[in-house]
Structures are given as structure tokens and as C-alpha cells.
Image (tube, rainbow over all chains, first blue to last red; front, side):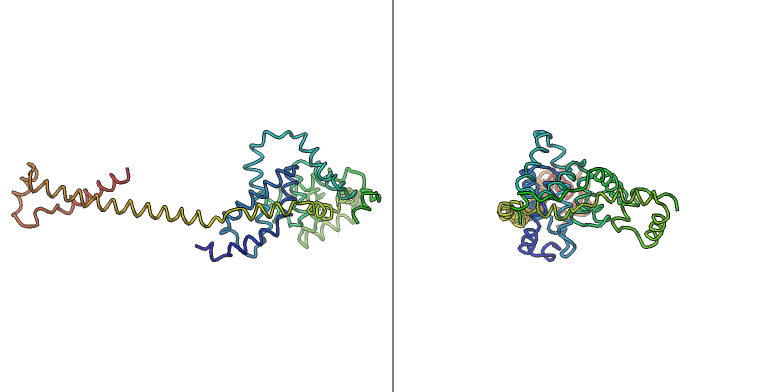
Length: 176
Length: 154
């Protein structure tokens, strides 16, 4: 009965609606597939509404939602995901970003995308979403030491790339 | 200070160290040219992550995601009706238990009045006849209740 007292469903849905783009972006980072990303966001919304009672208003809904999406992906989707060919997914993901590429953004995203999943999601939560180490650890259900190891390993790989080249291109002109 | 690990250097780059550790590490980096180079190497991975992914977020199919969210039925209703169902089932179980108990006691009473068993005869011989004799003794009633509820649950 705490559920009803915590936050009205209407307010909860409105708040949920404000996080859709960021959830989708995280779903895309994990799955590297637009359709899967969309389905992941949907599943996260369903789960969030079911568990609305567990959410304490004002405690960072985004973090809570990202944690839900992450566990749906890890425990319920990835483990059973057999029908997709991994090779095709990577290519598709790159097509997604190439749709209207900003040269710098596309380079960054491709480099992050080339990391193994555990490093990719850790880099994303720490450096894109800007969560602290302990918040990342909470979302991913791992110890802070694991977050640190993943970030150090990922950074060493990312350091191998040549510096980003901010060359203006015709595409960039389209963007401004 | 022992040679700091890459994890510690990265934590320093990410401003995740406490004041004391940070000071120690900064001193070590200042004193050790190789360590300084290692930090510079690691910081090559400082990229404009947020800008890149903010552009990506603009590609999110927001209208469709919102429409799908709006189409998710309110979970309150099914939960409520499920609660009601469980409540109703529990009430029905209780009511039928009471009825069965009454029926059984009634049947037992009739049986003891009309066709006395040898055990019953023995009991009636031990005790003076009275109007209350037809009612089962307390321990018997407890047993009967138990039997009735066990019967209900099975």
C-alpha cells in the first residue's frame, strides 16, 4: 500500500516519458541494434510500471531505469538471443550511426562500440551519463573495484587510437 | 608510495580519489617522469563522449517509444482484480470450511443419537445422561475441526 502513497501513476508515467531517449541510447549501446533497443525500452517501461512501488520519488529515476534495462538485457534477453547473427548486428549498428554522421561523434561511438560489452557499458555509464563509480557499480550490480578495472582496461584500448581528427566535411555542414 | 596501478591513475583522471590519496598520487606523478607519461597515455582516452552520444540520442524514435509507453496498460487494475480474486477465494474457502464443519457436526450428532456405536454406549454409561450429551466433547470437536479443515485444504 506504500505504492499508492509514493507517486501517482500519472506522474510516474510522465517522468518515465522524459527518459525514453536516454534509455534507447543505452539499449542501442548494449544491443547494437535499433529494433532490439526499442524493444528493450518498451520492456523497461513495462517493468518500471509493474515495480513503480519500489521507486522512491526523487532518488534518480534514470539510474533506476538504467539498472532495470541492464538487468532485462543481461538476464532475459542476451542469454536467450540466438536468432541474431552477431556480425550483422555490428554492421547494422554502424549503419545507424552513419545515417547522418558527425565525423567526431561517429569516431567516438565507433571506438566505444568496439569495446567488449562489460567495458562498453561501464565507459558509457561513467563517461556519457556521468555517474560516479559507486553509482555505476550499483546499476551494474558489480563491486566498485570491478568498475575501476573495466575503466582502466577500456581506457588503455581507447588510448591506442590516433587522436580524433576534427576535419570539417560536407556532412558536418549538413549538421549545423 | 608504491607504484600506482592504472586503476588508481584512471580514478585520479576521473576525480574519484579522496583528498589524501589524490595528493599522494599528484606528488608521485610530479616526481616520476615515467608515471607522468603513463598518465598522459591514459588520458588519450579522454574523448567527447557526452557530445557524441547526445547526437545519437537525437536519433531516438521518441514518438514511437512514447506511443508504446502510452499503450502499456495500467498495472493497477490487474493487480487489484488479482487481489480481489485471492481475497474472494480465501473467503469462499473459509465459508465452505465453516459449512462443512457444521454439516459434519450435525451429521455426527444425528449419528450418535440414532445409531449408537459401542464406544458411544461405553461413554454414555460412564457419564450421567443429560441434554448436553448429544454435543461432542471438546477434544472431539477440535479433532473434527482439524479434520474438516484438512479436508478443505486437500
